[in-house]
Structures are given as structure tokens and as C-alpha cells.
Length: 149
Length: 383
Image (cartoon, rainbow over the protein chains, first blue to last red):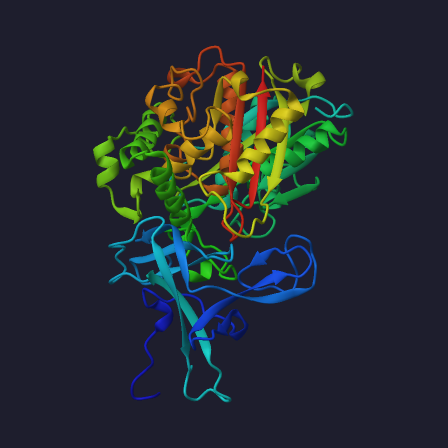
């Protein structure tokens, strides 16, 4: 056991699912962003990316970099959840300029939704986590959450 | 209705009081409801030709486990899992089989023992991207509620009034889990679950079972002096809609009900009584609109003016609904059918909807990203 066990980031109020590297992209400004997919046949856009289009079953899916600023469609502070989650926490749907709606945790202060409102502008934060030090080879993982822009 | 299908009627109903029955097993919950339904239909177990069982969390072969100890083992058994629509789906499959002429006497039951899961929110599939990011069912409805309040100017008190009505109706139902009335203040002051929803705005953890027996209408009068006809049955599944969608429009319910109305020629104006999927307060308001009882944004008016209360033009959830009668998920569809059949038979005592001739049951459910819901089953019944 390492002297200091890594913090259980999965349970931190503002952290959700681990992303696959393919769900992220490095923008021109050097920031990490989410990446979805666009169908080369019918134009359907999705997040997360999938190898086949859910609308037309086409297989020509291309990477779709997603914008960093979106609109909060709805959110809720959750007070009762399975034991894997530390309550309260805030979740919400964010509409991104590319026409994709993304669900995730919303960072408030200690799970409190102070200052949030429907239609608020929020930023999508994507964070690299280098993973456990003994991982070989070291494989970065990524997480995302939303916070007021 | 499809021209090549036989008319089908309900000739027997049974249900146990919903509540916390930790001392019972899944078969133990279902068997009294099954026996009551058979007795009411004047049928011996050996006359049942097939069994359709609906449940979401009861493990393998629930239908066989119930049949084993009720004298019906050996007949074809179909076990249906379709989240909260499980036993309504079972009913539909049974209806298809009888209407098609495959069987004459078929038993349908739904059962669920949620107390064995320990309470709290329902365990959802962690493979789903939203679930693995913290989605729980109350939060999904909470976000619909927030958006509905934002878009249509409804208030948290309006939401609470749905629970108050449910408990007022449930107090009149001996089979309901909650049999006491409540107030707006008490609802709003109850424990917070997922803002803006409080505890008394969420269906309770509970156990239960309900059963019905169906047969061709031409044989029904030999078994019941008040058989109830199945006027229509429709099942829909979730449609994946990537991108932006209006979450205050319950897409699967709108689609399922409009297709059923078109198939049967029966419209919302013809319905005298209905049971809908009020798993959370906001749900009932959204379903008034999706089922066509009123235009978009007018559900609160319908609630406030008493249209959907007992004594109103179209009472909704006279049984107390999922909020008061309880919601043992796989049992709810069958229990709604039991309530509507008994309403149409005039057997509901102090919660009777006088003169009810046409009734509807609506159940949906299943939390999966990209869907409004995973499944929806709607049935129409008539005298």
C-alpha cells in the first residue's frame, strides 16, 4: 500500500465516469475538450462516440470536437443515491453548440447548486488523470464535469 | 382493432395489499393474487392454458415458481421483464395470444419485492453513461420537473398537490400502501430526494402482486356476470433521439397513446377513468398532456379545477396511483388493470367513479440515456 492512498476521485461530488481517450480531443488553444461523433452519411451527431450511427446504422462515423461552453438545460441536486456516490451532488444536462446534449456532474460548492439556473452558460471541464503510479504503461484517463462559465 | 383478432375480456382479478412484506417470498406475494383471480373467474387451475408473468427484479422463472405451488405447473410460461411496464407487457402478450386464437384461458400476473433490495433508488445498469455519471430515477424526473416549472410557470406547490390528491384517493383504497391523507405543507417539508422532488413526491419502496385472467369475449359471460372488454392494447419502446429534446414532452407516452387512439377510434374525450404512471408528482402532470387530457402547459389547471380528482370529469389514479397505492415495479401494470376493471364493474366502494364505462391504464419506465423511457404499455377497457 502506498503511504498516501489516492483520493477516491470517483466519489468526489463533481467527478463522474472515466472517459475513454477517444472521448476527448486537444483543442488549438491547448485545452482538453470532449469529442463526440458525426455520421458521414446522415449527419447525426452523438456523444459519446459510437462506431455505428444510431439513426441510419451507417459506419462512416467521424470525430466531432465539442465546444467548451454550453447551456444548462436542467439540473438537480441529488440527496439519495446508491452508496457509490457521495451525496449531495449536482447533475445536469448541457446543450453544446454542435447540437449535442451531454449529461454529467455539475460542480457546485460541496454539492450545492447555488447560482445555477436553467439556461445558464456553463463550461465543460475535461481533466486528465495520470492514473495509478504503478500502471504499466501509464495510461492517462479523463473525466469531465460542468461549472458556471 | 385488427380485424383478424378475437375480442378478449377480463373475467378475473386479484391483488394483495401493497406494502412492505419482508417476511414473504416472491411466489408467496403472487399466489394470493393469482388464487383470487382464478376464483373470481370460476376457473380451476387446470383450465389455465398459459401464464404470462411480469417482474423486473425477481430472478429466474418467476412464473414457474408461482405456478408450481398453485396447481398450474407444466403449462407454457412466458416471463416478461420490461422495467415498470413488465406486467403490462405480460398482459399485452397474453392478449395477443388469446386474441389470435392460440389459447382460451390465460393467467397474467405481476409481482415485485423491492424491500429485498434494501430501499433507496432503484439499481440501474452502470453500463449506461448517464447512470455511471450519477443518474438516479428521481433525478431524471426532478430535471423534468425543474424544466416544466421553468417553461410553464408552475410551482412546487402545484407538484405537491399531485401527491395530496394521490393520498386522498389512496386513503379510500384498502389495498394501498399509504392510507392516510397529507397536506401540501407536509409534502414540501418532507426529506429532499432530488430537488425539487421531496420524499412524499416519490413512489415508495414496497412489495406487491396483482393478477388477471382473460378469455375470448364470447366465453366471458359463462365466467363472470360483469366481464370487462379489452378495447385496445399498445406497446411502445424507447426511441433514441440524440441531441436536444424537450424533456417535458414524454415522447414514448405521446407516441404510444396516439397510436392506440388511432387504432381503436377511442379518444381521450371518451375516457371516464384512468390509471397513469405517477412514479413522481411531475409525471402525472406530464402524462395529462401526453395522454391528450389537455393541451400542453395546462396540466396544472386540470389538477387545480378538480377534473382529475374523484368526482371530476376524468378521475386519474382513483386507486391512489403509484404515489399512494405503491409501486412494486413489475406488479404495477397488472395492478392498474385490476383497478380499472373493478372500476368498470362498479366494485370500488367509496372511490368508485360513478357510471364509468371506458377506462385506460398507462405504464412506462426504464432509465436509459437517449430515451424518454425504455418501455410504455397502454390499455383501454370497456363495459
